Image (cartoon, rainbow over all chains, first blue to last red):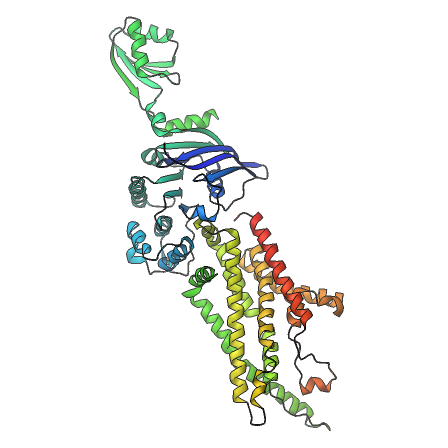
Length: 298
Length: 268
């Protein structure tokens, strides 16, 4: 049993009439790469702000590593919230020294993290001379200082060019392969699908789904089937209790299944009706399609 | 404590503006004193040239009155280190580094403590600078008639100035941490110290206005004895009153705990 890293219980935060975080509960275990998905303004950053100690929740609670959160528990977490925050008139290295001092990490670690994000050659330049992509990378370097077991990355590829995005993505994968727990907030679904193991979808501050990415992607609710006897295939599909809808294309049918049904069950059903399927393809649904469908339902 | 100091020191160590401003302040003070002295002497001689009562020229720099003289003047220019302090604190809101420091692993109390440590450092540096300027000038102007022991008299004005500076910086910190925006905080501080508090002080009258924070800070070191002012029949207080010390200490503690409460409640 993996250790629970973060447990959020019934968290609430209101800004006037806006219910930014609405009764949110979630449990994140060690080694999980947890994607938090949601459109802009869905409460992702507010939620992360609360669990990082900068925003006070109205009600509800959260625990880090099973403990009541305090400054010391935060030192075990590397985090980026919204945009990179550094003093512009100091060099990158001087800025990182401040973070070392707060986290009680030796200054030698600075060279290591700068190397990871590819900024070693610019470590002595003033922060204000950095491009946005470099700032974002420096923020990631800062989060990596002291090699924390938990990383929280809020839109880490925001404002980066395609090369920068690819670089940061590779970086996250590299870190993820070391059994760290990562919480990644993003509205780039492709990014989450490629990197994350788990996903939490929030909309208007409410949790609308939390599951593994595999469950969403593999448990595609669609299958494509083909049989020699197309007329009978159609008829049986119509009579089926678990095929919600279908559409025909040539000799093939694209069926949308009820939740929880598998390709195996489809095969079994048609066989019991005396139809031998020539082809049975589960159609993998992308996270994006699923996400959009979820938002539409909500 | 040392860690707070290190964190704050790292933030300004390579920030040239701070050192330039601090340098200008100290240098200006060192030179300004002499300029003021000669200016006052010139005014006196000009105005009394036709007078029947001869007024002697005066020196700012004779032991032991040099302590009260210089620390009294320093009381007027504490605005500059105050601005510097407000600028440094509000800068951290502009660049969201206070937020980042909390995320990184400081508690909100630790943030406040680190700013108080910065205030203590600024108060110590300015006190030390004025002390050294006073000491050097005192030694330069020392004549054989002035006994050496006078050097150690009235040194109470040194810690008194530190407390004055500290009280002032705590008021600055209050403005900086509650208003957060550099311009807003600095302007409010200016309006409060130059316009608002003096008006309130005037309305309250001398018996009550000694309890106002900036008035209390200024009261620690009263106007020094000068022949000119003596001539006008002014009453001098050439010591630091225990009552003023208590009021200032009370304000420092009060501001600290009020800020703790405000920091705890507000989102960053």
